[in-house]
Image (tube, rainbow, N blue to C red; front, side, top):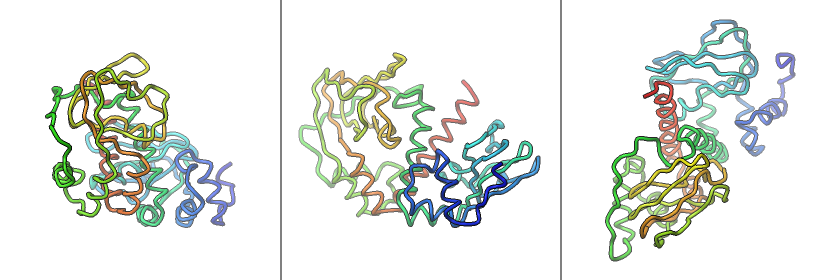
Length: 305
């Protein structure tokens, strides 16, 4: 039984973390940071771990038994063995928090929020793995397509006769909610890691199963995205395609073909991550944005049309 495991040493706790899918990709340094503060907790039936209306103070991994939880305005859900509870709400910086209780006898792995926050700042591998998990959840919520339907009316954008200057790109980035509070140095670094490309009609940008090492921000034109089930979306200006595949470290989940001339900004995954690693507060803002998006999509799916 897990409750009989010796977890007195940091190494024992590292091995326990290494066995969990949410933490398996982390390097030893990141695992050590978490293992130094985690503990295994035995819960009685009905025991409350998180309280709605309060910030999330711990994230939990279910080791044995079940946790029953809900967020504000949401239906009650059950998490089982190896599920993570509270992580997304913590990353989203949601002050409403969530309610979580043991469904019966349960054993959980408790990770203090304060320790997680410090670990994120100290080791970028934790932030990168959090992005991987969040992006994977968002892909699933969107049925392996760029956006959740219904889509807004398609906008082709404006075909500019000349390439935008660095200043023009910075102004456009500052309009986005994610970047409105970012410092100028971080925005300049992001702008410089993007490359403008022009693609002729009928260009296959990528196919399902291709490696995901970059993504496009569409400035002008229309692309057609089709998942493995044959579902198609037409995507236009100001949409990002391919970012979630890349962050999830997954193969391409949909085909993309240009319907028209397309002008886009191409951003390499590793260049983007390098900027976030240098500007950790921007990384936290991005994690919060990603977590909020996943939570909103999960809530909309549970509530139905």
